[in-house]
Each structure stands twice: as structure tokens, then as C-alpha cells.
Image 1 (cartoon, rainbow, N blue to C red):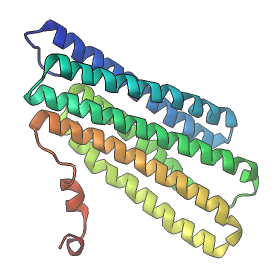
Image 2 (image 1 turned 90 degrees about the horizontal axis):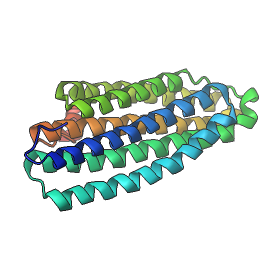
Image 3 (image 1 turned 180 degrees about the horizontal axis):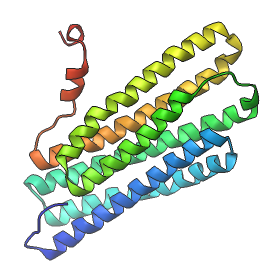
Amino acid sequence: MPDKHLSSQFDADLTLLSTRLLAMGGLVESQIALAMQALDTFELDFVDLVLEGERRLNTMEIELDEEICNVIARRQPAARDLRLLMAASKCVTNLERAGDEARKIAKRIRRIAPRVSAQDVNIAEIKVSGAMAADVLRRALDAFARMDTAAAEQIILDDEAIDNEFRAFVRKLVTSMTENPRTITTALDYLSIAKAIERIGDHATNIAESVVYVVRGTDIRHEHRKRQEPEAVRT
């Protein structure tokens, strides 16, 4: 977190805010882990736990947003301090949305569960990308806590691997649906799960980009995506 300030209370405010933000991040990590356990076992108890956690996440989002606004109003921060608080606000939003994606996964699993014994869809890529998304979110939160730009930049690069897993799964899914139309309903549910996992990776990347913004004052949100596009798309 930031350097020491002349006001020790300002430091205390920022420390408390960081602690609460990371606690919210820990809950989101737990939500994702539960959703992936539900995907692995199709035990609906895990689905219920994800849905219960969603309500706590919504409450934490509201409380953190209010606290950030209060700190800005009381301290009137400038330069890096203001960037930090703006980044914290964006991180709260990204964490809440990552939690929403975990909820979407859980709800799709509840739909699939009654017909899981008859499914004929290989979901290996989903499980791999789920583990990758959980890892990249954990690393993004760690990078934010330490304001580690090197770690943040690596996370931004690693997000492409999650996208690649998603694209590979989509290609396989199209083939499966073409060859066996009976799988279409289940396959579309799995497609929604795969997309939700990809979005979790995107939210982790957004958090990593915030770290670079705080430390360097540079907004890189679109730079790395532009570099990944084929030149014909950019022109």
C-alpha cells in the first residue's frame, strides 16, 4: 500500500480500506473455488454456498464504496493517493462482478445436474481454465496489496492463456454439437460456464492494470489488448 503520510489517521484509513478490500477478494476466491467444486462433483450443496456468499459480496461492495467516498471527502487526496482510491473503487467493482460470474457458474451447474449422467461433453478445458482464473485472481490481489507492477504485468500477459483455453473449448463444443445434437442443451450451459470463467480472468486483469495505474500514473487498459490484435484489425 502507499507510503506513510503526515496524518497517521489517513494511513489508518487506507490500511483499513486495504484490509477490507482484500477480505472481499478472499470471499470471491472462495466463491470461485466452491463453483469449481460444484462443477467437479455436481453436489448442489456447493451451489447453495455460492449463492449464499453472493449476498455477502453485495453487502461488502456497498460498504466499501461508501468508505472510499468517505475517505475522499475527508482527506481530499491528490496524485498517487487519489489514484489509489480510484483504483480501489474499480477493484471493488471487478471483485463484485467476478463474484457474479461465480454465481452464474453455480446456477448453470444446477441446471446441468439432473442430466449430468447422460452428458457427452468433455469439459477438461473448462476445469483447466477455472484453475487458471482462480490463480490469476489470487495473484492480482497479491499484486494490488504490494503494489507490485512486475507481477501485475505478468498477470496481464497470462490472461491470454485463459482466453486460449476458452477458444479451444468453443471449437470442440461446436464439433460436439454438430456430431451429436442431443448434447446441444448441455453444451450451451457449459459454454456459459466457460464464458463466465473467461470473464473472471478479465476482471483479474483489470485489477492488475489498476496496480500499474496507481504506481506509474499510466492507464494501460487498452494497450496490451491492441498489441494482441492482428494488424488488419487495428488498421
